[in-house]
Image (cartoon, rainbow, N blue to C red):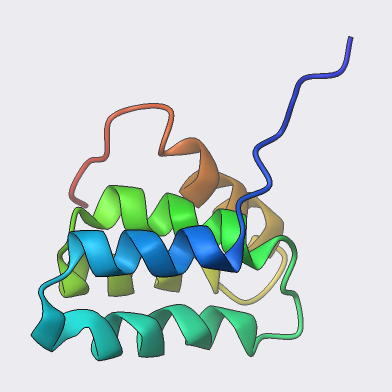
Length: 95
């Protein structure tokens, strides 16, 4: 039986950024999120962005850390991306 997968859209990302970040931090948040799109392995970028936003809880430093996990180079790339997505189903931990 196939499980439903949340697709997430760019509109969802924009809405959540504006909801979670102070107006003075919105542009910086979008700049960090757009860095994920510019990678050659951009599989479901909106879904990864939404997961990173959820864990970041409106904190730019946390958002940067979550996105860096999603951008890890090498053979671990797919696993790291999965870690960011699945971290939204369990509590987000620092470190």
